[in-house]
Image 1 (spheres, chains in turn brown, yellow):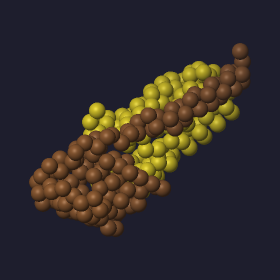
Image 2 (cartoon, one colour):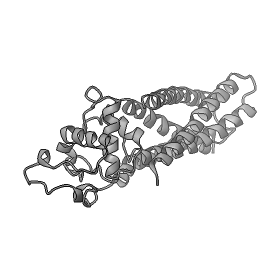
Image 3 (cartoon, chains in turn brown, green):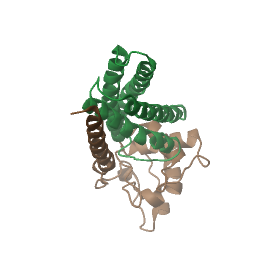
Image 4 (spheres, each protein chain N blue to C red):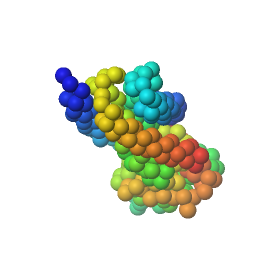
Length: 141
Length: 139
């Protein structure tokens, strides 16, 4: 086999390997994305009085939350509940209960958003508000 | 597995393909410029690009798991991915081509094209590294 045919064969094999690798990159995320799990009761729910069934804003604030978590819950209800559901079990957006991502990753998503899926909250929330949101999400882990 | 562990694994694995690709490109460029064609510099470039491609696979897998399968994302993550995906594909393709062609057998013209692709991939990897650094600094 001469050098030219070996180079062309190399190009063909490299093309096939690239297609396979590209397919893996495109298909792997679907396997990695977690389906929203059935929402267990919120940890603070037993301490909270029964909420009237008139929407997220009417959900009673739990009494067992720390001050940052309570502030985070308030921010969550303002900005997140519409897409992620008032009990964080997921709706248009994914469930935020039992998050397995780090604080840094949560902060990154909140500040940067996800193109075509979630807006950026960089102008709305500073580090303190994001820390409060994380404190609240920690209570749902 | 814990997300912070995957972040650490991604950070640990991602620097090897960056360094090895740049080294492989440098070795091959130097060998290309040498009057003696197939020296040990070519061997160094050959093995460096193969290990770099293996490292790229590890970095891609750890990155995908870390971001829960985010292919693009937003902000710095989006730009990181804009550079990462073509760079990873090109690295794997380049390594495959080198393995099939062999360490010592190619024409100078074909290898010149390979070097041009290697330089382009190096630029893409540098871009990916730049935006990866922005991701870390923005935390």
